[in-house]
Image (cartoon, rainbow, N blue to C red; front, side):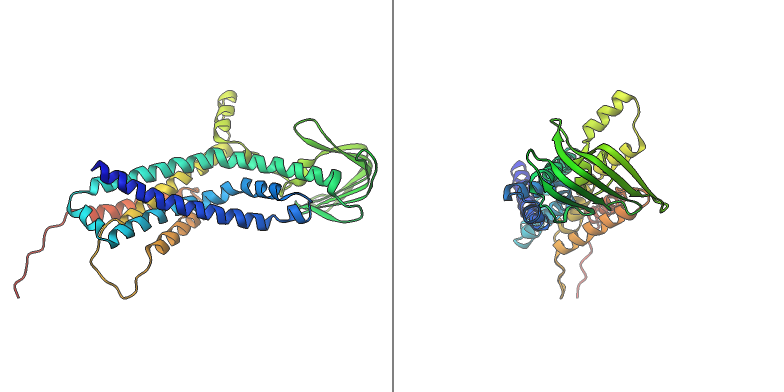
Length: 356
């Protein structure tokens, strides 16, 4: 029985890993194409483009990870069902080996989902923000062409009049429209990019800050010197999500040090943990529909991979729009799968033979 468990575990895991690797590679290529302005507009190299696309991968990989596990399981079960191995497993009391192998793969997938959501995704978010700030600093300090409007990030446009020796920028202009309720415009006679070793700062001299408040009022502030973080200009949103850059270990450690855990942090931890529930729910559903041989023949056969894909996206849709939380769809799928498994495993009385 141990050999059967090892054989099925290797079979389930191989299909899931291969599918996940192919999906990640395709998503990485799509990210490279989407962010090609890093090369064409911002003057960076192909290596920088590849690294930035890699840092944006974890959120996308996490969205498809549990589906890859489910499709990997269903493909393997369909394969052993097609060559009658699944029939032999059921008739030769090999079901414990099947359940053990499925439990190992689903459990490993749940642990991998927890690592992706609680640690790798926040680290990648932090790295991509740091890289975006570095690219923006290089763009302002050396790449930005005089007399040409350049978009640093969606909603932020820069313009300079010229450069002098030592990296001094003349006639600096920046327009920030990321916040739909307000607008900020920076105008300065000169500017310079500096660094304290960790962050890049844009030093504006002899200029004005013009902004429109949410109620429509216009205000203008004149300054002799105004320092603004380059990172604040390079992010897609005017107000970034700080929790997205902090892994769960840091959040829990800060809560233990301060003695309190904010509701937003609790919700973030629950949302990240829901990714493991998705793996468990879709894995159990796959077993419920594909782990039992059937002699029925239908004219139109629906691929089980398509069923798993549809159920996976339906679960995510329910979790996204449910007022009860992100894990609502996963918990509902787990309950549904357990009910289907219980029904299919429930012992039935043999039907008596009827003589013709």
